[in-house]
Amino acid sequence: ETCPQYLVMNKYESDRILSKVNPPIRTKEDNEALWKGIRDGVITNLGSDHAPCSTKHKQEFWSATVGMSGIETMLPVMLSEGVNKGRISMEKLVEISSYNNAKVFKLLPKKGLIDIGYDADIVMVDKDKEWVVRNEDLSNISDFTPYEGWTLKGKPVMTMLRGEIIMQDGEIKGKPGFGQFVPASTAKK
Image (tube, rainbow, N blue to C red; front, side):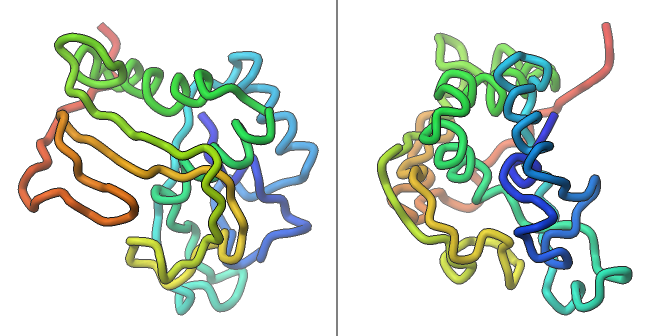
């Protein structure tokens, strides 16, 4: 598994306190090695490591809270820096972010594919939509994003859960209580 921050951030160009995560952000060479690992099938899963916190918890490096918000920027970063820059295909992105995760957590045959008997969880994206990341436009409890000011190309424009539209053009449409708990497992059989 890897996460977007390990693919696009490096210790020379990122705010070392705001982007403090475990394992730490490394070098551009490490970024490229991880992209290669995805293309070669060595890295099979994408996560977000979503751990929102406040800048008040990130004042000094050694005592700074480890983590950052990442769930809302995960797909746009991967579309912009992966798919649109030719580092990975759209099919590979779907594989590492949806199908393989559903497989690892034993959510097949309910999640992970668009097929008869599956939940019809679908994200529609506009691969060409350019936008600037601003924390004030994100829906998280953090007061910062390490991607602040980044211009990305590619953005989700509609999300469906069990066939119902829950987000469209950045507006939450889902109704409270519509979510359902889906038990996952990593136990070997």
